[in-house]
Image (cartoon, helix red, strand yellow):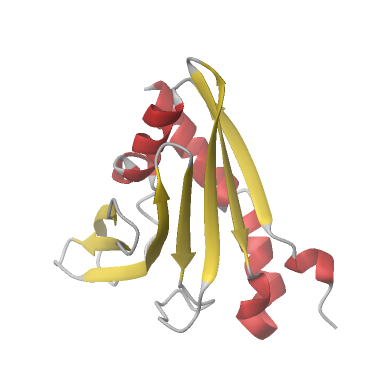
Length: 157
């Protein structure tokens, strides 16, 4: 029996010294500045992480061999407030267009010069038998919290 608590969304947040517009731009247009190079699915080393700036856009990597590997899609592009993405990577770390989990990113001003960024990854049940494992992966120190640490470091650089 799958524990419903383990299927709850993975939620993590960080506050960065940027306005909401700057924080949104760093998260999206600046994705390649903070995304960890080892967090990829292609066979070759990753050259660049890309998030196309529009609803319906692609979320993908470009590898050093020129291959493009999809990670998902941009569902809602609402700068500087909200970004909704489809994460379509399987437990085997391959792209599957039929697998859809959601990553919602909310940008909330704390004051004029700082923003809280909340990432919520949900629909873990769609991983079936691997749901608990995937939730633990995303919620662990090398999951979304680790990526947001990199993001925060880029925000202060």
